[in-house]
Amino acid sequence: MGADLRDRLWDVGLTGLRRMTEALHGGGRLEEVFSVFSEVCGLLVSCRGHAVYVISPEGGELVLKRAEGMEPADLARLRGYIEEGVVAWVMHERTPRVIPKFDEAEGDRAYLMVPLWIGGKALGVLVLHQREDADALGPQVLQLITLLAIPLAMVLENESLAEGMAEKVRELQGLMRVASSFAGVLSLERLLALLTKAFAEMVPAEAHVFYGHDGQEGRLVPFEQIGAVAPAADAVSRWVWEHRRPLVISDYARDPRFHADAESPVRAVLSVPVMLDAQIVGVLSAYNRKHQEAFTNQDLRLTEALTQQGGVAAQAACLYESLQRSFLDTVVSLANALESKDAYTRGHSERVGAYAVAIARAMRLTPDELRLVEMAGRLHDIGKIGINDSILTSPCVLTPPQRQEIERHPVIGDRIAGDALFLGQARAGIRWHHERWDGRGYPDRIGGEEIPLIGRIVAVADAWDAMTTDRPYRARIMPEHALRQLRVCAGTQFDRRIAEVAAEILPGSTRPDGAAPSPV
Image (cartoon, rainbow, N blue to C red; front, top):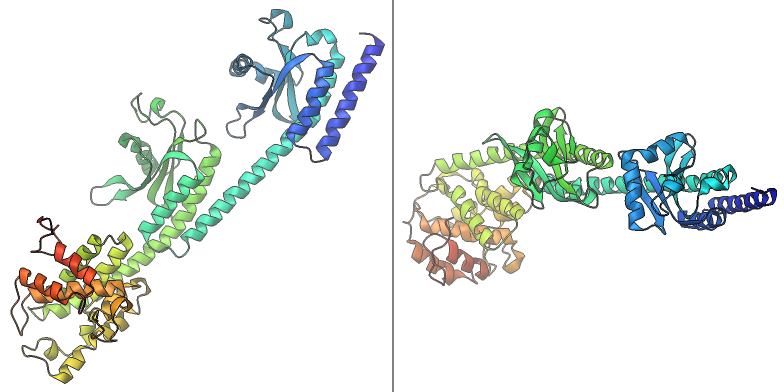
């Protein structure tokens, strides 16, 4: 190579290096720096196209970052070189290499590979698709290209750091949203639904399942599920439950621990235990990662952080539900003890709860609302604890003072229930189950939709049981007569819509089509 040509090459190379450095310091993005690089390389080396492969932070594999002017056949051949370890060897040597030698290449498929390093850290490799033998141009060209690769490596590292930081910010924002959604959720069922939903949003996959232990049958079962998953795939979650440690599987069918069917639709699995202190309470599993072939270490870290938040929230929910059960057991025991004194009312509250739930279910109330309705029905007469037994068991028509006394029981019951915040709207069924649609009930003489829905439902259920069971002062009436009474009082004593629903589903009734109702 002549001195003039060498000087011109150095001038082109150094000018290009200056321009790339200026672009880099000016906050230039990868596209801008690459544009300068491509222009300069076109002057130094006759090349058809180029590609950049970077080392993935997940798994350390080389993945294609950018390609220009490369045909599918080129990328396929380069993938073969990667799998054969040729590219790793070039990176280890830290010296540009032509692979294969130009005169050994098929046609003109020879590639100049330039390792990309920065601060002792391997970032990836730059590949130039040659039109001519770059080795014949001399070491000066390779040296210039190596220099030009430095700002290229710097912008790649900057982008990698920026992407990593942005991803961390997104993760933290996601976890903060999850923590916010968990705050104040004291229903374990609701919490598990939120946890599974957050899992699905943060780790995209074809299916997400929260598995819990069925205490009765002693096996792991899905408590919450989003998406469909093959039944046999729960073997991974059982393994995680037994070993109490997470598992990431990239090829489920070939994993010797599970003897999966080769035709199984499950390919990749991520499964993480949910712990409360040292106790395992569930397993969160995802199947078949979307947008990628397998779950990553980042997916695992994110899921573990999610399960830690879920575990803390679940601990609070479990404690709260335990307190709920304790309170309800105590109050229901008192109510049962009260009813057991009178053969006529024994089992009344339990039946009212069942009737109220049947009506509410027919009205398509939510599961949470059904629980409130049931509690309201079971506890609607708890205030009778404060009423004299002689009045409660009197076989005679009550005197006005006695009537005034017994009409205090909804207020007394509401006062008792007021100490349990979790009862919430269930208190409506305790305080207002004797209110009437026309406003002539007690204790507050409210009417219409001013009476909360739960109060109106319990009013119908209570009246139904009162009519169809014996009382000290009268015998029961037949269900068909009770149904007639419900319809007669619809719009005066009862909410017409609720009375009509009750008339269709309560025992002894028939629907307009002649079908028998569902059992209560």
